[in-house]
Length: 201
Image 1 (tube, helix red, strand yellow):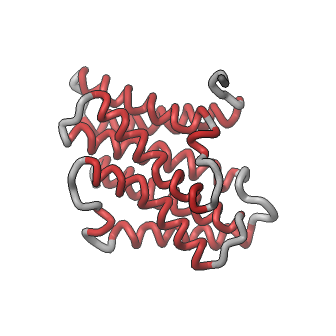
Image 2: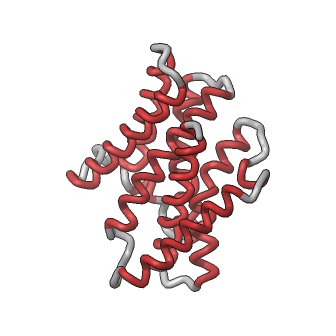
């Protein structure tokens, strides 16, 4: 399993859990929980693939959908063990940080393999990381978290920039992706821990 495959599986499970837990927090039924979990898991990757002109990976085999269902199942189990509101519970925040990191790395990898400009690589890393969660927030009729929390998309931007810089230094794509993911996860967790935010207008 190469870096892309590993990060993709991690991201799918993590974001499927996050989307499902958000849906449970909004008191949706089992179908709604499943739909939101799948959308959160597959949304960013689908946008990524469409932008580079290829058929979304989720439509080419049953693999990605199956992995996402695993994340939904884990979330359903967790809802039985976690009381009250889930949105700010570590069971949501930590998988969300993991998914953000993993998908930023896959987006950067796909962007570099597609021959995108440095700007394109960074944008694709960010969009892959935040796309699915933004779609889920819209279905829940709330402003996407990426527009409310400055240090949600910002770590993905940082990760995309560092990924590109490492490639310029002749670091392999797999190594650059792992560093990207580690950086995104670390910055996101630190932002949660210390309530970092950018200046408001």
